[in-house]
Structure formats: structure tokens, C-alpha cells
Image (tube, rainbow, N blue to C red; front, side, top):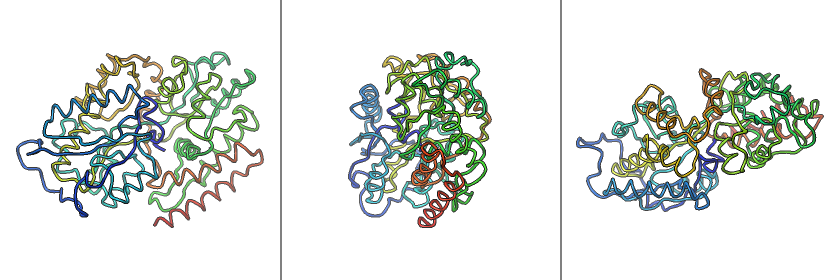
Length: 464
């Protein structure tokens, strides 16, 4: 589940829908031939060119929609030969049924949003333009960190990442203090998480030590994050078989089962979807949950939590860090001129320090959060990376200390991507064992994993 799957509502990520005609992306049934090297003379199109884009913040997100519109206007003023014919909005940016229908019908916008799990299959199936001949025209391209590798295949580049995240342990400092725990020294192991959860639950009615998802694909998403942290895998390296019916997978479920039924530190309420757990965490009586740094922003912006009470630290005992995110690809029907125009828009809105999503001066003035450690797209020692860090620090309106333990504790932990192009279907299958251990005291962990393994294997065989 990408952070994208549930956010840009949460002060960062995802926000919009997908809807235009195929003719807006290019004409004809065959993809345009766009793999010739650009001619000398710069990146500007020779004549007027029209493109369409998606992932505009919805009308309900007034602040971010206003800044996005500002950027549309400023970009077209700077590039009078480029017309952004339409920018579509809705929430979230990636909605599977809409995306798949438009993809199948060839109706995606010229520049379209894509979450990391879908990148591989779009490259494999030829449903994204080859950007390799054009990326050197982008000033910031050379400064990308390893996130760009997700969009590479056979030495070619098919998209640009614009966002990313890694999991951690989110906790409530105020609840920790009430339970006699040190909020400056949060748990570093799962045993410490369990012990802290028991103390929090002992505070009395309504207090929950640790909250976890159990449905709507988010249960399987968090199972994956915990499994990765313990050193396990969801799929075999070739992506053809399930790989979670292992001691690591058993440890994830047994730990939750023990906290739920032996310790009674998880409460009895099920958190089936993303808002339900976030709402509970914002209520001020839940101690801990798994989440990325932007969870703190979501608690503040979307659930009116007392922001200063929350902090994030590194995922306990992490051997690998669940890493998700999103970026943009370009319709393979786009002409070379449209590809150049689309790349210029992506760079302006998402990749240029001081502009678009990296305009921290404007964000601070609009009371949007500044200071959280994302999106980190550039190497820290590159000019772009250094400029982003400088602007972020100078304009911070949230306390960087709330993220510092996560930043420091996550260093050196290898990132691990979501489990392939069918991640959402796999998460739906993994919801079942997550839900079972939280609703049935007699849940058989071994059988739950075996059944889920068989279902995932059948899914992968069917998909080919």
C-alpha cells in the first residue's frame, strides 16, 4: 500500500483522480515514436504543445489546491509554448478501478500518477513512454537518489519518482508520560513494544497500547511492513510464489495475538480502514501504531490531533525498511514534444527546490507543514539535496525533533519495495490472517498462513 494509496490528504501525498480522453494524450492507436535522441538546441518545444495532467488536489483540500493552481499558472507563464489543457482532480490519486479502466482504454492523461507497485508492470507492458532520451535535459535529474532505480528497466528510464516513505513506529508522548514511560527513549525491540503497550493499557478504560489494521488491504499492508522488518519476504525473488509462511511471518501474527489476547493491550475494536486507526490515534488514548512520518501530518491536518504530542521513531529491530511511494510516467502515445513538456511540468511542480511541492516558503505561509523529512528524492550531498534541506530547515514550522529518532534510526536499513504489481490483491488476502488473530483467541496462525499462501500462489499463477 503506498502512502499514496491513502494520502496527499495527509499533508503530503495523494490526491486525485484520473479522467480525460485518449485524444488528449496523443492521437491514433499506435504509440508515438519517441525514442529518438532530442536534437540540439535545448528542451523547449519548437511550437505550441498541449498536455494533460492528473493528481490535482481536490476542491476539499483548499490550501493545496490553491498552491497547485498557482503553479499551473506560473509554469505556463514561464513556458508560453506549453498549454496544460486540463488538470484532473479527485481523491485519491490512485484508485484501482478507475486507473485500470483508463489504462485498458488508453485514456490516461499525458502525465499520469503511478504508485510504486504498478511501475514494473507498466514498463513491462509498454504502457509508459521511454524517457531516456530526454531526462538529461532536467537540471535536477543527476541528483536523484536510488529511488530513480524503481523506474529503470534494461538501462532505460520510464518515469520519475516524486515521493517516497519508509515505515516507523508512531507514538504519543503524552500517553507515554502518563504510563511512566520515557518518551525520549521509545521502544527499540518488539519485546519493548509489548511491555510498553501493557503499561499504557493499564492506564484504564479507553487506553490502547498498540493499534493495528485488520482489513481493506491496510491489514495486509502492515503485515508486510512488519514482516520486512523481521527480515521476511512476501514473495520469492522471482515474484512467482508466496514466501511469508515462515518463522518471520508467524512471529508477526503471534506477537499481535499475544498482545491482543494475553496482554489485552490492543483493545477490542477493529480498525478496518485507514481513517479508523488514524481517528483512534488522534483521540489521545492510543500509545503506538506503525506508520510513516507523514502520519503525524495526517493526525494534525485531517484528524485535528494535538500535533506536538506525537513522535516517530525507527521500526523496531528492522532488518529492512518497507519503502513505498509514487511518481509520474508519461503516456506512450505522447509525441516527443509532449514528453518534453510533461517532463518540464514534473520537474517544476515536484523536483525543483523552492518551487511546487518544495516551495517551503509558500507552504509555511499557507500554514502547511514544513520540517518533516520527506519527500527525500535527492542525495544529501548533491546540490539539489543540500538546497532542499536548507530551505526545509529555514522554514520549518514543525519541530524536527519529532522526526529525528526516525531519521537517525532508519539510517543504513536497506529499503524494500512493495510486493510487486499485484500488491493490492496480495494485501487483501493477508487481511484475513491479520483480522483473525485480532478477533479470535483460538486463531491458528500456522493454518492462517498456509491458507493465505495457497491463495497468493493461486493468484500469481492466474496472473502468469
